[in-house]
Amino acid sequence: MRNCRCSPAEASGITKEPWHTQPHPQPATLVTIDEAPFVGETPIEAINSWLTPNSLYYARNHYDVPSVDISKWELIVDGIVENIGEFTYSDIVEMPSKTIPVTMECAGNNRTDLYPPVSGNKFQGGAVSTAIWSGVPLNLILKTLGIGRNVKEIIFEGLDSGIPDGHKKESPYGRSLPIEIGMHTDTILAYEMNGESLPVDHGYPLRLVVPGWYGMASVKWLKRISLVDYKYEGFFQKDRYIIEQEDSKPLPLTLMKIKSLFSKPRHGEFCKYGENKIAGLAWSGTGKVERVEISDDFGKTWSVAQLSDLSHEYTWQQWTFEWEATQKGHNTLMVRASDDKGNTQPLDNIWNRLGYAVNGVQRVCVNIE
Ligand code: MTE
Image 1: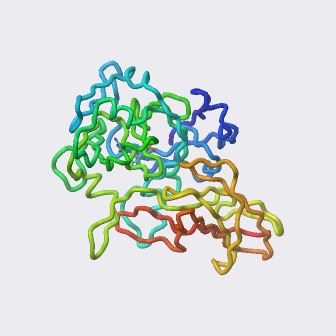
Image 2: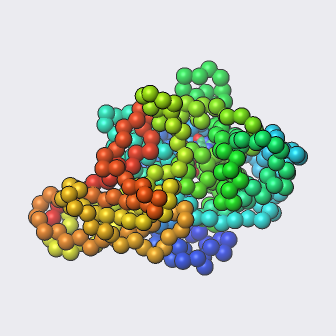
């Protein structure tokens, strides 16, 4: 367990924005999923606010967290560029910056909901968080250096390295993005999280943030960015973060699938006979959340929940619903979200061997007194 220091998210002028007035969850600690390297999820009872304080933001580390001497650290940008770039930390923070709130979910979130069980970190639903990130748009750096011809992908390499499962050779955590995603104006190299310098667990001194994508794309502790004209096939690109298929090639994970959860009530809670205010969050990397629906009859009928006005292109949205409990004893509630691109959560989870992109409709069982 780790101690909490709630982060105020007050710097960088972000206090003026409406999202700052959102209540923070009560102090708590991350739930440890793995000790070394550290993997922790946000406690389920703390997933009730729009903004996640840094100390409660889930952490997913594949290797030991690297320690960085900032006076020696530099970011190299090479490959098919007209000029190779070498940037110190102060070079980066002096560049024009951008601040964006982003909801990030680990692709393995809710893996424990799959049956039969799969191997991998036992995330129970807390590997999703929202922070306000500040940093330099990557396209600004790339345009300054000059992008060469025929660039297909951008490879991002972290300072952390180790020996991946089933391999003999040490390799760093590396991922690639198609050039058009890297050049998107909202793909940033972040050095601030909720107005604080990037915490060590979250990638200090510099990390990539790819809004809308599952978390694996947002490479932490950046050391090198390379522009290439081929398909990158590192372990975390080719062997992990894929959905295997029986008759065809594996599908790489990219945008977060539409998903929703209950913050209130939680599983096993007592509710009143009559009116109950229930609430939760919904998000999608593939579009804007358009509709959240609740069912108390195992999906026979659905009623539309109210979406909060506080919304941003890349964040989850809070929802509320006045639920009239008419039956004493056990009741099952279900929540289902849809986005404006026509994506709706499936009723049941779609099993896959590596346990990724679990987004089936969430059910909570409550007791009516
Ligand atoms: N970057 C590096 N260098 N090493 C890592 O282990 N984990 C990835 C991504 N970036 C990882 C990384 C995964 S799987 C996720 S879900 C996110 O970081 C988690 O970011 P967080 O730990 O800040 O929540």
